[in-house]
Amino acid sequence: MLLPDAIDLKRIPRHVAIIMDGNGRWAKRQGRPRLYGHKVGVETVQQIVECARDLGVEVLTLYAFSTENWKRPADEVGGLMGLLKTYLLKELAKMLKNSIRLTCIGDIARLPKDVRQVLEDTMEKTASNDKLTLNLALSYGGRSELIQAVQHIATEVRDGSLQIDAIDEKVIDSHLYTAELPDPDLLIRTGGEARLSNFLLWQASYAEIYFTDTMWPDFREEAFHSAILEFQGRERRFGKTSAQVVSE
Ligand code: IPE
Ligand code: IPE
Ligand code: MG
Image 1 (spheres, rainbow, N blue to C red):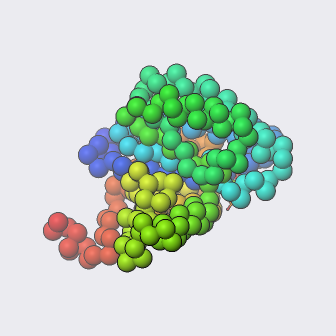
Image 2: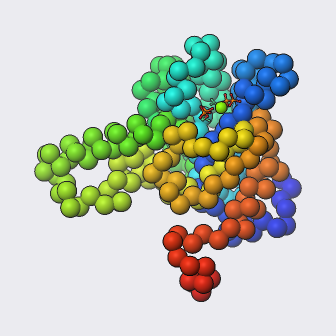
């Protein structure tokens, strides 16, 4: 890997989350079907995972399929599910070799059974890996995540195991799919749109957001390094003044 000198390896974001957008438009521009864009997008995933691991990122969350994406034409949904299954089967050996742990967030009960089985199998086999956590957001929606968290919390209150006064940020965090993960430090969206599309609504409250016009199939190592550099140039104030942050 060619690493630009300017990247400070001591200030790598712990958790990078990416909205991988633009596969369809990228393919259309070349007169190819949308699924071709998704296929090349998988190659980008392979490169970015490797790159994140080499940089020392702890968690890489990839938004691969949203709750809203179920509304797409059945052949595109089927194609995406097929690509996911093939990707998991193909990458297992590499995940084991590179100590990558696979996790997922989302309503995976909605995934086709064969895909869910491969997913669960991959998660189980990589569970003790400790270099990079590759967290796939699948059938994921920030709002449905919050709804299920509220339902669980309400049940605990009703059953008397949780007091209303005890509900704080930690309690909410612990009821989200991301319970054991740190909040994202850097949130990237490729494909030119500047919106969150229901991604990590609670967790991204202080993430640095990076929007780029580059379409996901073209977002390779160099583009990822540019995003990291931009992140490192920002001052994260968390509500404080710049002078306070500098003196910390
Ligand atoms: C992102 O690319 C991949 C998924 C949402 C599954 P799109 O399929 O949204 O591509 P565009 O936005 O139509 O170009
Ligand atoms: C967001 O992209 C979801 C994923 C990247 C998986 P979309 O293409 O679905 O988002 P919208 O519909 O343009 O907001
Ligand atoms: Mg899109």
